[in-house]
Image 1: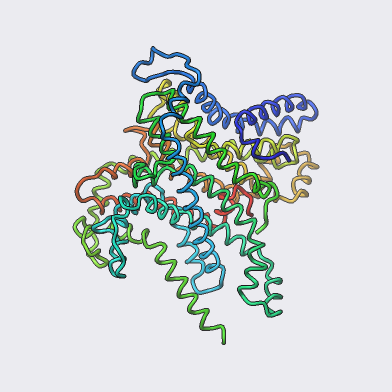
Image 2: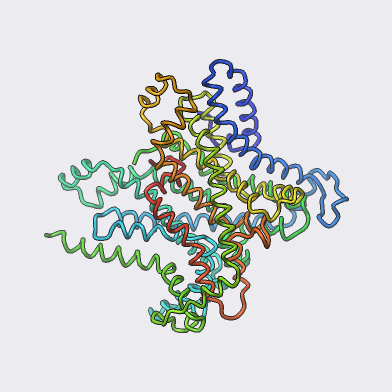
Length: 319
Length: 271
């Protein structure tokens, strides 16, 4: 199996699909069955290519054109000029730092909380099914609704529930979103993604061989030792899946930034920066250059996480 | 007996943590049934006389139309996803076509390409074709985004069908398509429903694309909700009512699909 990282690159994808189509063509005649199978497969693949890959190709084309929406007649090829403008603007590095900071903090905190809840909810206790149902709710709540609720009824300086409880406990009561914009967003993200991490880790815990755990207990292994020597190695692959998927989704996160901070206070991530450039400004060429750069950076970041982890998807694991 | 006490304590601790964790949901639902006066009280009120003014105001602001747009976009896209993905997933599961691994990798890689990457051209194309602010155009975009996920998930269900079952059908002379419609789909209905529910969830909750390609007529619920951000004066009760209504369908659907949620989220990797 060739490295998945290479496959992420867009040009490779297209070439592979083309090769795939060519090969498919040459073998179609072999059996009527195969032809039919491909007839079942193509519509979906072509649909996806038209709507996700062709637009990206256009983005690349646009990025080499000087095109202002106010002067649509005045379009010309400018080569890499738009890229030069983007790189010299000084917005990229802060956005890259914000993206990495936000993603890392959100992944780590939701993973730890998710592990805690997975361990707690793996035990048998009264109302376990209800507790499991309740705990996945934050992941299901519409992200825009969750961000609004956190902003106005949890974080609000005057009437927010967070500071009300902080006051009861004698803790400081900051103006969360203006004093700690990054932390506020990470709290919302961690809240949303803890159930996601928990679901994956819980599936891992439940797939453990009960006999091994019982044997360990009979042999006098302490709970902590069993956890350390049996459960953790077993969970490894589940951690990998959770981190990988969590990272990919969180790298592209948009809603809480748009609603909580609008990118102020060091929270302007690559995806928010792209939105701002593409739809608030009027310069199509420059926006497209931002798009291409953001995609390349996202792919590089995702690939770093993917490279070592991808085999789990082809193998699959049984819960 | 020795283990009894710590277990009870652990159960209590678990419940306390669960309740703290879902407090924001509980609090939003509560605020939605308060008057604006009660909702903005300091300290917060836990006891109050229920008030439906928030819900009335939400209805006056035309939320029903936006909810309906969300219904059309999510269900419409899910139907398209299923029509295209069930045959495709079957083709990829039936026996190893040489290229099936490549196709699967290609599909998963589109999922990792930021949505934002192609949105600008899509926006301009829709604008030139006059499909901007069209809820069906939104549904088509959602379908394209969800197809890879659906194919991966459906394939993992199809692969679990014992070979003997499909082979028996083949010996009886059933063609591939008959085999799919008559045998595979009926056996895997629970899996297909789960995949459809997960596609519905993603489409219903989507905000970024919706806010870009829809306007006054096709606006779905998330951009409508987000417009509260710039609200002036007292609006916490009405916002909470709107948020509750907006989140309710997916919360219910998610609870129904919870058994299969993890398989969908892991693209079929965890069964």
